[in-house]
Amino acid sequence: MALTDEVKKELTSVVSPKTTVRAAELTSILRFSGGLHLINQRLAIEAEVDTPELVRRVRKDLAELFGIRSEAGRMAPSGSRRNEFFLIRVLDGETLARQTGLMDQRRRPVRGLPNRLTTGGREELAAIWRGAFLARGTLTDPGRSAALEITCPTGESAMALVGAAGRLGIPAKAREVRGINRVVIRDGEAIGAMLIAMGAAGTVAEWEALRQRREVRATANRLVNFDDANLRRSAQAAVAACARVERAIEILGDEIPDHLKYAGQLRLSHREASLDELGQHAEPPMTKDAIAGRIRRLLAMADKRASDKGIPGTEANLPVDIDA
Image (tube, rainbow, N blue to C red; front, side):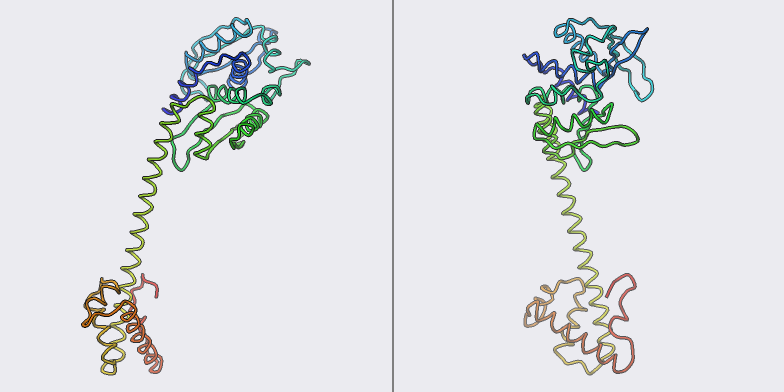
């Protein structure tokens, strides 16, 4: 969670001079971190946040943007929250709910985000994502399962986030797992673009550096595995060739032409050598194709003779764990 904490710390310090942008972020924080509740027959707004810094920011924006007083308290871990958190509460929150768009004019809760926010400018759209991430966002380390993910209270709020990301030119997907709605960005370039759009330029540099190191390491591991696989295949091919040549010499006996017998004995004398290396060991030196051709003719002659005699061919000597 270290990366998530760093992103949230940096985003908490982002302050826009525009009232509309601050209001968009505050609305998103309230939408994704809490909801509307009835307390003593009064409509209240509650928000659960992770840090004292975010508590101060939310309470400050409530006071400066809407003239709303709020109360806050530290809460012990409970339910799905394994760590302590902070609860911000606004009693008599109906006016605030109307002003932020969390409730429509008919006093019905808005399940998504206010339309005026999701159709706003780029700064407002980025503020929506910033608020959602501050409320319920996580950023995993770059790698095969890298993701920027936001847990959403409803499917409608998830789709609103996906739409806002699309208007910013960043692909995001909504999914529901075990009844929990989430919005996820998995592409590395898209994650970097969203971090920059939200205002986490400092953290994105660190994230990108870590991603590049992981990619270099993964590429190196793939090359090592590739080389190991090639070595294993070459070793198996050499073992198979030697086994077949031994059987060919056994089948043909004294009937082997001298030039084919020489190629076969060369193969058996240098069991781990490549065809290029076998050619260099020959006297006079031979090309790779020439030595390969002689061994092929030797095996073909021996297999034909074995077939005529009704006896096992050159593949009879192959180890059981090697394919012909």
